[in-house]
Amino acid sequence: MIDVFYSLVGVHQRFDRLALDSLYIHHLDFVMKPLFDRNSPVDNQLLDRIYTKILPRIHHKVNKLTLEPLSIECVLNTVHYPQLHSISFVNFHYETLLRHLQGDTIVRLLTDQITHLDIYICEKTTEMSEKNELSILVFILSMGKHLNDLTYNQWLSESAIRISPLNLLSKSLKSSSLTKLRIEVNAFDECLYLLDGRLECLSTLIIYICEITNSSSNTNNTKTLPKLKCFSLASNWYTYCYDNEIVSLLRRMLNLEELTLFLSVIRTESTYINGKQLNDEVLIHIPRLNKFTFNIHTHVINNNIKIDLPSNDDIRNSFIKIGYQQVDSFADDKLVNNRGNCHVYSLPYQFRNFMFMNSAFQGGGFDKVRCLIMFDRRPFEYELFKIISRDFPFLENLTLRNSEPQQNKQQQSSIFITFVHLVELDLHSIHIDYVVQFLSDRNILLPRLKNLYIDYEPLITVTNHFTNDATRPNCAKIEQLFIKEPFVRPENFQSYFPLL
Image (cartoon, rainbow, N blue to C red; front, side, top):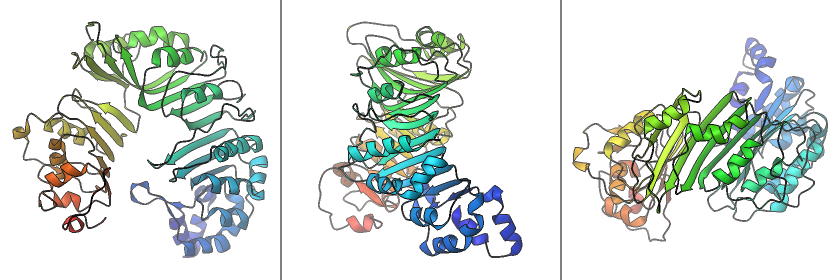
């Protein structure tokens, strides 16, 4: 951290030797990361001294810079960095970043030195220029003569429109040096375009697709992809296109060595995805695969046929038989309203998200998960939340969707459930039982809760028009309250939510 580095330099000669050692200064991060990873600019006074007193002493040892909008100009224009090969741009708007990229210093760095580039867009406006975003990518790839590793991520507010970073007419979007790309896109077509040969040397593609739908691309979707060695495909939303789009794409990756899948698949008049199906349809076509990490959720809708659904043991055994021993699953063995769900995932669980968990969950180790979304047409009982608080110890974001009332409220334990790290809770469109359970400090403790999404009617009911002492402690911590419908703040509202 740059502030720690600053505090050591100039204190003592021995500290100077330690702080200015190339082992510690090869990467300078000019973005502060306080609790909950909310980035904030480094103090200006601190930066001024670093620019004028410290950078001139160490510039020749710096290999990587992490910059935000307020620090970029001074850091890059103060001194020359002959050993710099990696830059991360964090919390930039599109137009601001494009303006800086076209400056003489960055143009020279991109052309002569930079091999690794990370871009993290943070956009809050509802209107963004697709032309600007496309210009950023085209500019980077055209100027980055030595660029071999590019990350392009977007952090957008709910009101912002996610603009796809690719355009069907963007023939100029190409590179002859890039070997590794991490990127977020809107649709499956963008994935196909990235693999159509415009990135000649690409061997690793890590891609998040907002929604995977049927392709409308005119590109050759049957051509093999022999250069691709590592492929990661993730989407947080349901797709109907697993069998006809995703399977077809994976079969083209003949020399793939590492595969990561994070998918929620809807199938109609069918059964759950299991190990035998996955092997017969995909894995036998990529014989060099030596690492397979996955979380596959299947949601079946069988309105017209009756199929005996496999059990948890059946699902696990189907993977064990094809050589994947470290696998767990939980599945509905009976349909509810002609619908059923199965989650199967490799162990240890490697993802930050877990999507569409239901009441069939029995537990496991999920230390890496930070975001959990729960949905079911059966009640979420108290015991399930006990399991989740235990097995998701670092959970930060929780979303609940369930319109069914709890059946076992009288069996709730006198032992409190605590979600130690939970920052954000989404209770929109949910039965009031769960509002009671999570907002009352007699049921669940939420010591770090800051953001609450909720409907107004259940909120005033559970808080008894903002007078209920049982819900006051959890509500008093709220810093951001998201209520969709307009309302007039009543008399007790401000004292009940003092941090708003």
